[in-house]
Amino acid sequence: QSVLTQPPSVSAAPGQRVTISCSGSSSDIGNNYVSWYQQLPGTAPKLLIYDNNKRPSGIPGRFSGSKSGTSATLGITGLQTGDEADYYCETWDSSLSEAVFGGGTKLTVL
Amino acid sequence: EVQLLESGGGLVQPGGSLRLSCAASGFTLSSFAYAMSWVRQAPGKGLQWVSGISGGTYYADSVKGRFTISRDNSKNTLYLQMNSLRVEDTAVYYCAKGAHAGSYVELDNWGQGTLVTVSS
Image (tube, rainbow over all chains, first blue to last red; front, side, top):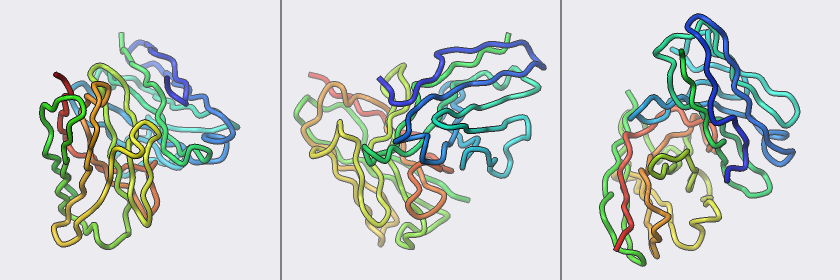
């Protein structure tokens, strides 16, 4: 069971917008930065968002991140079929002294 | 270009040991400018952070006392020594680079992974 809670799946039509939530506590999200990763089928994860809302170079502006209190959200606009993947949030847990991931959310673009 | 290449995975019996390696190129491990992590993914499951090294070392509770992370600066290689392996340690193990020192969360480069199977 993951420390961070994500919905198992979300879906939306091409061109639409979707959000993925990540819920934690004061010992993790509440006091630490959040990152988001995209894992396409059969590949290694890829960093999408870091420091709650920053994008590494090469990541399209369609991807955005935000954080409020003990929750974080990944937003994806202009959905494409190539966005179908598993998405994970990650943060540091100050009480456990270890990094923790959410359980992952499978995005389906209908 | 940063590249991470894991090796050392395979089939091992419960209670056995295995050492994973991660050969890094395109940056210098010994500079201590970057933290390094091991992250695993059991078949059909999500990601689990296993261990990290920067100035110090950190471990997930589930592997503490059994796994040891280390690096050989002369070989620019990261290691994960895994002892007392359990069936539940079966997973693809990824090596990942942190964006800066002490960063176990901002993992900006990943290897392709190596599969560890613990089974009798």
